[in-house]
Length: 248
View 1 (cartoon, helix red, strand yellow):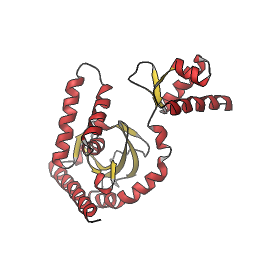
View 2 (tube, one colour):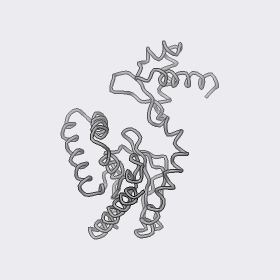
View 3 (cartoon, helix red, strand yellow):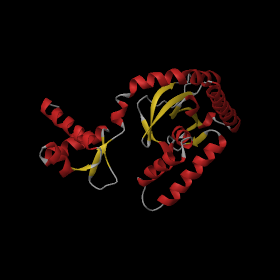
View 4 (cartoon, helix red, strand yellow):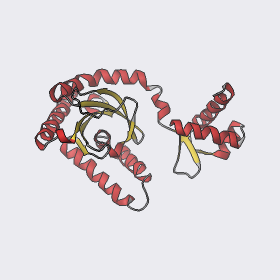
């Protein structure tokens, strides 16, 4: 990409940041003083890279959560320092993959991973993202949020689904979030990846309400007894974190 194209791309990003609202192609071209075909080509590239997204307003564009992740590396280091003792304890006890995730919009970004030493495994790379409602990690974080932001996230996530069945999907998600709160941890089996189950908790009690940790296990290594042990261990970590926060 030439310097001229980079200059135009940053001009578009700056317009979106300055206005603070979704803009149409025509508005971006006018604000950026650029030809519409040029703006369209650059927007397509920025969207493919994940820095710009289409909004509910038809034909409009907005900055994505990924831009904020460019500033997240220092924050990730502080978050890892808090989470690693918990992650290491789970890894030592179960020898399964332990993930640290951060909620960014309707996505969970994986910030750190401790890999299992066992041969058969599913490893997600740091920086990868999943929609929060498809993962135990995302549901654990969102279930622990206050009512208003939780409701906004549920509505935003469900808005991307086909209109037919959207109401039922929202009801299922709200039921699962309620079950997660009652259970003390989130569970999912083969919803994100075939053959993989996960259990997760929020790190809100550690002062990180937008973060959580999960343990990923191949389903053939996840009998009911192990599921019970893992969920009990996660609930205990949650309670321990609550006690620590209360006495801090």
